[in-house]
Image (cartoon, rainbow, N blue to C red; front, side, top):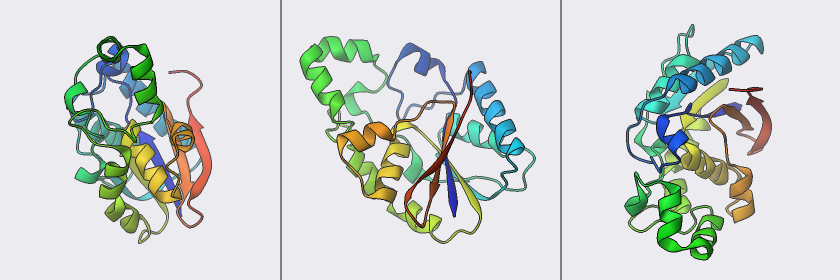
Length: 199
């Protein structure tokens, strides 16, 4: 069963390089255009979804609605798909956190790919644990399934599916705002990628 794992489209906070994890930031114009172009690519490839699930944050909900336009499927909201909590770094620019920690310490922390959480926040394994019911639900579906989430929650989902949690694996699971990763539930591996030529 193919799982189409989409990251939400671009937001203004993405442009500003601000940690926006649990803050409810809407799509910007580019984000809507990315979602519309991805919807068109899915249509060109004849992809039809039998079920869909989304993070309840507005940027993911808006992306899901665009991707499902023309379909009878309505995405279910699921709190398990909310973005990894960045704790004390929420709403801060990455540059400011780097200045706070210093280059070496910041680079060391970032290289863990959130296996080490931000102060007061979640780790990638915390997020993978809360995604276990989503993985179980996926195993009960038939046909193409759409998941719309965020950078780190999608990474955690792929890690949970594949049981790969090394920093290198997590880095491989990173996703741009204009990409949909395609995974096979049975083999628990990536089987494709849909990406826009330019956003």
